[in-house]
Image (cartoon, rainbow, N blue to C red; front, side, top):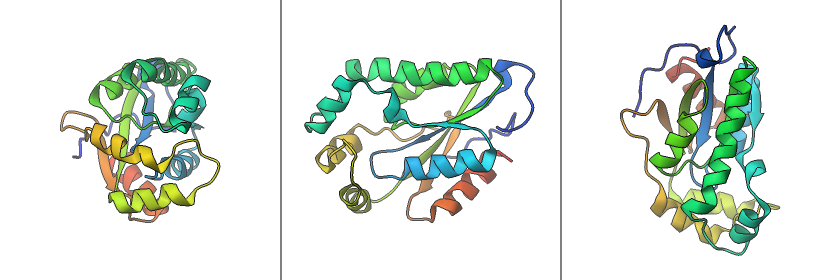
Length: 185
C-alpha cells in the first residue's frame, strides 16, 4: 500500500495548524517502532512521543499480566495520542509518534488530530517479532501477547495515507524509505 502524500512534509514552515503533517510509526510489539520513530524524528528535526507514555497505569498493569487490552481500554489512550498531535499542530509543529494502531478504527481516531496524519506500518515475520520481544528488557509487553496483536492487526488500506515497510531492513534504510515514499524531505 502506497498513497501519494506529498503535500506539506514535516519540518517545513507552517502557516496554519491544518497544514502540519504528523507521522505515526505503527505496528505490533517488536516491530521496531521506537527505534524507527526516534531516527525519523531526528532526521526531520521534529518532536517525538512514545505512545507507551500515554497508557494509564491500569493498562500497563493489564498488559504486564498478559491480558490484552480491549477497545474500551484503548479509547482514552488513543484520544491522548490524538490530543498530543493536535497540540503540536496548534503550536505549528509536526510530530512523530509511535502507536500500534492495529485497527482502522484506531487509526481513524489518530487521523482526527489537527493536521495531516501519515502512517509508517512496520511489518515483519512473527518469528522475528517474537525474537525481538524476547530480547528486550524492562518493557511491560510480554511476548505472549504478540499472537493477539497479530490477530487484531488490520493492515493499512488503499485509502489510508501511509506505507508499509518490512522490518527486516536496517532501521536507517526504513527511515530513508519512509522519507522518500512519504515525501517528507
